[in-house]
Length: 494
Image (tube, rainbow, N blue to C red; front, side, top):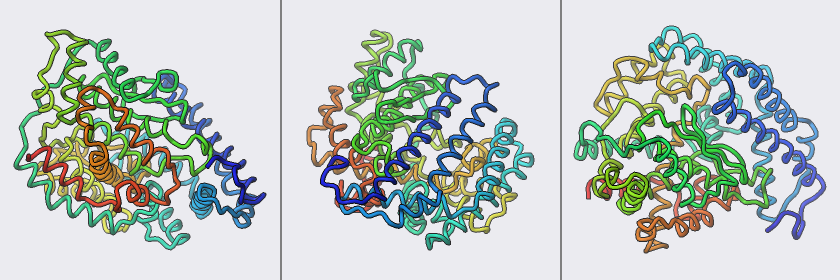
């Protein structure tokens, strides 16, 4: 239903829509500034951009927490499903933002700003001692923040953090699913590990970029709405009609192309969000588990498959000629090579969930107080050794390799693996509905796949209250590990 049709709300709801549209515009502008900062912005302009982001964020927070917003939320009514879901999301955002005193918001922002600067300086040498005071400050501020948000919503502190990134998700479910993965995946790795990773496709950057743009077009991403740029770490951001993705050309060329496919999955989700509800909370994505499921639906489920290896080999030969051609079977071997690695972002599909399990163990202990930040390096290394059978030589390859904790992003890591589980569950349902899917992928025809995701995921926005609700309507059951473990067994042990 389009907004405004068969109106069953009231004036308070209408005022809220106008208010949240302004909040949405401010947040969108902030995303644009961050994109510019990470792509084209000169390093000397970081202070100015920081002030811009602080102003945009402050204005959005004021609109969200103003007394007028609280009054309208208390009085608003909406019976139509999309309007009711929009009101539900408005109330969720308002409750979370209003619970924390501004003094703590500012203190945490200062702690994060300091910690990220110290992390950038200390990580190259793995100087954890230099990083520790700043990390401790972030952990303490985050624990306080989690405690307050949890009390406001009747949640445990870590559940309150998880809820930021995957609304409705609880740590008991995460721990149970991770336990199932930890019981199976090390054995799979032992059976199929292949030693040092073989080099993938190579070629001049201009040719690789042409292939990348052909891949984006193959997925239905139009140049008039989607940009491809370069950054130190690949990412995707933007709005329905203005999406920006990046990749990193400095690493292995084949992985740069896989990075484009991964970020294209995120971009497809953003492009497919419900147009009638743009600038409204219900028109946003259903959290980071759902978002990661879309990038992995494209990269892992579809584009590291035997079927895509056929089309990928064709693209390489068309661009680089016979000397740059790859036999599809050999290409598939590179795409699905398994060997534990110390660096999370370079991990294969089977090892990756264990990297996330390591971080989940550590951050839940940090938030509960069971782990002192000073003991993080040993706890992290012990978990890596227990789950992956290798031990980091120092903090640079261990607990300091990711920026997330310095940024206060506790509760974010689990969504990477939860997204992989969701992608596998969606792929299982999709293949049942589209029996000729592999044949279409071999031809480079992604219209059936993208169409299915558009209907069952993208177009629903936040109509469902949780990612479990979203995946249940698409597959018939809430999220579990079954489809992912079946996928791993079929792809790697079949």
